[in-house]
Image 1 (cartoon, rainbow, N blue to C red):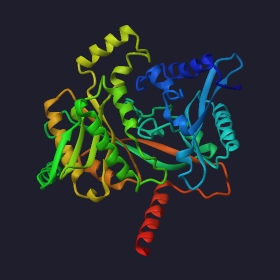
Image 2 (image 1 turned 120 degrees about the horizontal axis):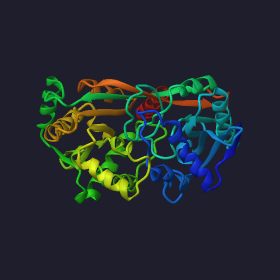
Image 3 (image 1 turned 135 degrees about the vertical axis):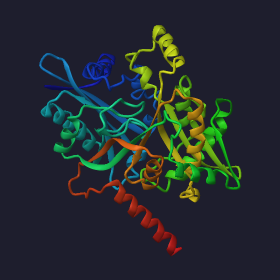
Image 4 (image 1 turned 90 degrees about the vertical axis):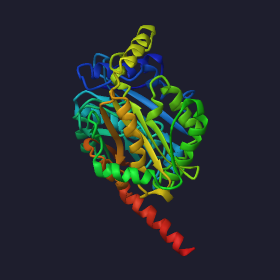
Length: 403
């Protein structure tokens, strides 16, 4: 077996095509669009290159056949927010061969070590952590759009190599085909919250996209700045990109905002599951596939939805505002009965309030992804994200008390 760095268009194409061969017989996998996949590695399309670097490698057998791939990268903004310098690895795919997997890990980690990294997280992506983040370890069912999918044996390779569970990411599923989508008690609370003075609710519209993008950024940054050590502030252009890419399939009535006396305080974003269409396109978006896409969309092939991201400003946590937004979504579900299933994903094991909301709506845990961490510098102590966050909150409280 030989490791080869991706250096030209031919290598890039082989890097891309490997996942199509690797999952060719797996009905649960959905092939991403070639253009969307390749954009991650294009400095002109991925702004993370403005503050990061990336390398890719192929693993070849004795007949020059690709049998594995991996990418290693450093987002310097994210890295400096951790206790130690931390890089990432992702886009990991390999045949069922432990030696092959370890060769890929060795290559990526050695490069990161030479770049001064003391730890590495994986499998993650080179960009925002709202999608394609973590390794699927439970719930090998239909892959939702933006959610990672992989071979079952990958977790053994990560853990045998020495990666440890940094945090779990849970996904919940809820059948919404019936009239009684959410429990009666939940709906009563939602009704009570929605009627409280000062609260108003609006769904997104492309006509006023700039307003809603700015509101989302305001809420998102207020929400997560106190929640994560590695928090990177969102800028309007980040969500503008998402809208531009998703305008062809997004449903305006699945993106909701809550306001209190005119101030944006919470949002919740659902995407129709584009994978239900993409699985028919083999990554290509030529003329025939565009026609096929439009036909399948019109036939309401997308019967599933995925919760992508949510936010609640700190002052409105525990107010029940999330339940009021779910009430708004309930009315959409009743109007658009072609939506049959809701995937609430992903929520970290450190986010107990959101886990409680998902359980309250009657959803059941269906998937678990794991973000692993490997300590390159063995002299440094490993800590799970949940413990790091508790220390961060404690430090902020102590600082506040000393003022």
